[in-house]
Length: 335
Image 1 (cartoon, rainbow, N blue to C red):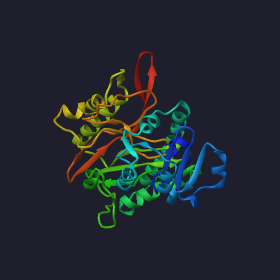
Image 2: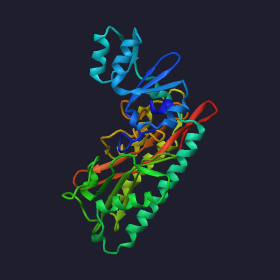
Image 3: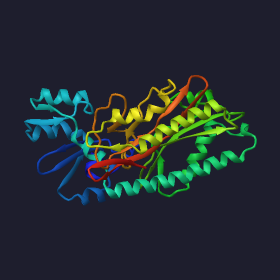
Image 4: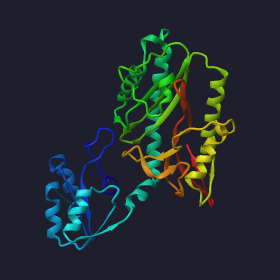
């Protein structure tokens, strides 16, 4: 609904969403939400095309409009609302929300702005790694202080509005936990020799970011260098993959895992997920995974994040966002 009307809200900490229902009819759209959170200027800007009503009036409005049938997506519609519709003799036709596929295709302006957002984010990351490198005694910095410092650097940008998901800041054994969340109890100092993995993202007025970097604290072993090189080669293989009209996420996934599998290694998560345009950091479609049979199309933005994790020792992941760009009859992924 936020994508369809090109509006954003503050009902979610990590995503700029307005919690609401939208009733889309032939000649008008009615948004049911908490009216206290909607500015009058926004309501007036839509004129008569879009109406805003209190969310408490949703069921009453559905009854008064004498709607005979509705199309809804059961995966994102509450069970309570579905039961109300059915009990009110309103026929429910279950479909996949068509907005999902429409909003996955970013236009040229959105792609351009996403690049700007990632440029801003890249500046913050470079400042963070320089900041880490300045400490000769790494006992003074840890997983939590590092992620907090990155947040401080991001806030120096006036277009930054907040994180797009909880940061994953892990050193050595903690980096081997794919969805690790540093706490005071688990927090490790970046001391000695080891691998530091940082997976974070931000919400900017220009777009949503998601990026992972893996750096070595001290001199890494030849084994870790070899693993990192294979992860990087998989990352580059996916970035340079020549797409055809029928290319699926599963095919792309195999390309990203190729160099790890040459030595019998693999990772347990998917290789990529769709990313919204100043919306949710996770969108589907598109998807890059072993089971993804969805075909890619021009304008779709997806994460490219192969990795490797050795339990209780270390974890590595390299992530950038890439998008599908058209060339003649084929497509290719571009960073």
